[in-house]
Amino acid sequence: MQLRNLTMALGALGLVTTPVLAQAAVSPAARAGAPVESAEQIGGSGVLVAILALAAIAGGILIAVEDSDEPTSP
Image 1 (spheres, helix red, strand yellow):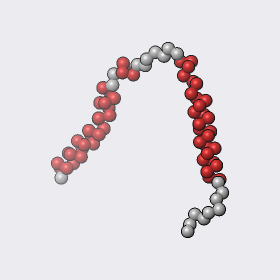
Image 2 (tube, rainbow, N blue to C red; image 1 turned 60 degrees about the vertical axis):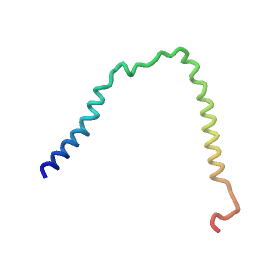
Image 3 (cartoon, rainbow, N blue to C red; image 1 turned 90 degrees about the horizontal axis):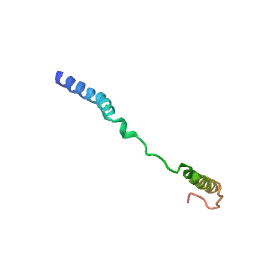
Image 4 (cartoon, rainbow, N blue to C red; image 1 turned 45 degrees about the vertical axis):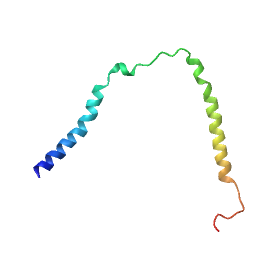
């Protein structure tokens, strides 16, 4: 019974300490970003994404309200 309790305690200790040790191992230099040279050209695709999203919503609404005369059950 004592060996089982010791095993469970060691397992719990490992689960608690692993994220703490992994967080301490990350170096601050690994998160440095690269400089952006032409940031003003990045925003152009937002309009295209908005148009595609509106088209998808409109298509979903049309499919949902489509009236068919055929029964769904035989």
